Each structure stands twice: as structure tokens, then as C-alpha cells.
Image (tube, rainbow, N blue to C red; front, side, top):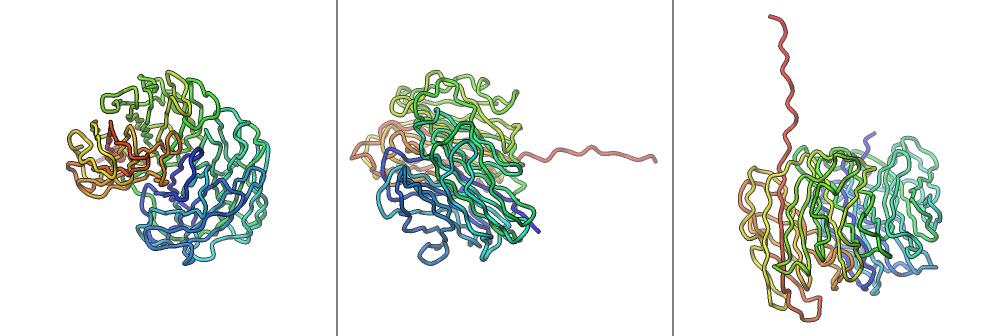
Length: 482
């Protein structure tokens, strides 16, 4: 019986300080036909306010393409969570829009793309939900009827004020973490149960939760969808917003979870750094175990105004990654919600090797809607066909909502919640991915929307980094005797 071999995910941070009625979940790669997309999320209401779900291939909740497998409330904290699914998706499905029937805060959605799940009636047993407490967070028993069921769980702490600034997680035996949020205390977990039976897998936290929402669903497996690529590709994206911490985390941020599945060989991290607090020596910022320090860095300031923001990239090729991996980042002063912003965007890439990078800065004294063409000072030039380009962009004010490539198609990943995010969520950053099919020149046109009360965009900065395919190791040639 096949089990999922392709598990690609994106984990967004929470929007806590502002209310919204919409959220865009954008997977790093488009689905192949027959795969399953799972959306997990939470929102600041004690009832189910998810009124519509629609994807870019015509699937809707009203039409029955999207299904609510489980919704669970915590009435004490006026918070709910849910797990939503579309099975047997059409090829190309990547972007999902969630609409809420009322404007609420404390909203967060993430997504998991999986192959080899049953394409019809995939749920095995009755989905579980509850409000567990303590350090072992489990949603409740699920009794399955088939072998090789794929369990997906999600847990949200709803009593964050009682927890220290960062939370770390560990998975149940045989399970892997996905979409962890160490600053607002939520995390997903998935794994396969080889035999049918009754199961209640627990997510473990390093400190005790007093209130929560937890959900688990079991899915039948079957041959369906595509497979992981043998060329360079992004397999996970995790955003950690240190603006969202409760209290002061200090200048040593971590350890915090960065789960990387088998096959990921490279970690690339972009940072949106409000006051230039990222340690200027990337070698001092470590992954799970030495010598997993970052190989290279390029740091640029925000249009000649470094007191406003910095952006940049660090990366590690040949990283010692694992599903239980952690990261520790050093900064020069502690991040805070309003005066010392710091957000990191962590990509897990498979089959990747660094090629090149390019940056650009400028000032746009125009109120949106407005587009800045060619945000890189000169086009990024890739050396080989089939590279992956990652773009990071930030501005002093307003919100980027569309990014177009001058050559080929760009895949925007920002959540675009329809309101100005301030220090929340992805901090109004423009970012995403492009598959550069042919070697050549690439630049980007960024369009902003007026989410901030008629202000101009002002200073902006952008940087792109390209990775090519890491060739497989050469095999020695052995010759027999003549």
C-alpha cells in the first residue's frame, strides 16, 4: 500500500492585532492532478466563521470541492480551529482564498500538499477534536478501519500570555512536525499508522499549555498524484514573526523548530529586519548542530534608510537537516512587537546549489495603487536552465499585493489579508518563488495596494537569490582484471 512521499507545506504566522475577513494561502508549488491539499487554521471566534473557501482552479466550499473535515472551538478563549480539505485536486491548484463571515483577529492559516491519499471518501474513522492541557497535546482517539492511514494533527495554544516567549515542539514517535509557530505556540504533525486500530498521537511541548484547540484527522492512502522532483525545488516554507512574541526573547533567539523532511539539502533564510539587529556575522547563527553555520549573506538596507528596515538572505548548502531540526539566531537587541521588528522566512530546498543573487533599493513617493518596475538594480542572471529564484521585498509603508516577473511566471506567497499588517503576520512583505525554466535575465515588478490610509510607499528594497540543481554524486569506476 503506498503512503505519502510528497509532503510540501507553508506555515504562516498569526494576525493577532488586526481583524480581517480574508486570507490567501499560497503553496510554494502547484499541485499535480490527484493530490490532496489540507488547510489548517484558527480564528478569534468561538464559532465557525469560515464562510467560503475557493481555489485558483475553480474549487469551492459551496460546490462541495472543499470539505470541513473538523472544526473545534475553545469557548473559554473565544477561539476556534479547523482542518479543511480538497481531494483529487486538478493540476495547477496552488492558491486558496479563505473568507470569514465576520471580521476577527487572531487569524492564522497554513497548508499541506500531499500525494498518495485516497481521492474519494478518504477520511478513516471519526475526526477528533478537543481542548487538551499540559505538555502532551492530543486531540482524542481515532479508530481506523484500514492500514497505512495518514494522520494529520494541528494544535493551537489559546493561553499564550502564560507561556514564555518561545515554545519548542517534538513529534510523537514515527511522526514529523510541520508549520511550527514558536512565538504564538501552534504546530502541526503528520505520520503513518501501519495497522488499523485506535490511536491518539500527542504533540509534545516544552512547557505546559493551560488552554488549547487540537484537531486530528486520519486519511486512507492510495496511489494518487505526483512525486518529489529530482531537480531543485522548494519543499517547505516557514515564517517566524518575532514581532509577535509575548515579552522579551532576548538576543539569543532559540532554539526553535525548523522541521526539514528527508531530501532537503539546503536552507535559505530571508529576514525582514526592522533595525538591523541580525548578527552581522552569519557564521554565528547556527542550525541544529555545528558546523551547520550559514555559508553566505548579503545584507542591504531599506533605500538608504537603515533605521527603518533591512532585508537580506543567508543560506546553507549541504545542511544537516532533519524533521527534528532546530535553529538559533543571534541578534544585537531583543525583538519587540512595535519598535524592533524581526521576521524570518525559512525555505527548505531539495537538490539545491547556490548560483547567484541580486538586489535593489529605491524610493517611491506615490500613494497606491502603484507599481515599481524592475526592483532589482540589474536583472538577476541565472547560469543554468531550471533554476529556482527566491525574492524578498520590503517597503517603509503600504502592502505589496502583486508581483510579476519580467521573464516567466512568479508565484507570490504573501498571505495578503486585505488589511495593513503592521508588526503582525508576514509584516507586509512581498515574497515568493519563480521556476526559471531557461538560463537568462530575471527582474520583478511589484504592485502595492493602499492598506495604510493614503500614505506613500516611500523607501523600498528587494533582493533575489537563485539556486541551481545540485548534480548527483559521481560514482567511481571499477575495472575488473583483463
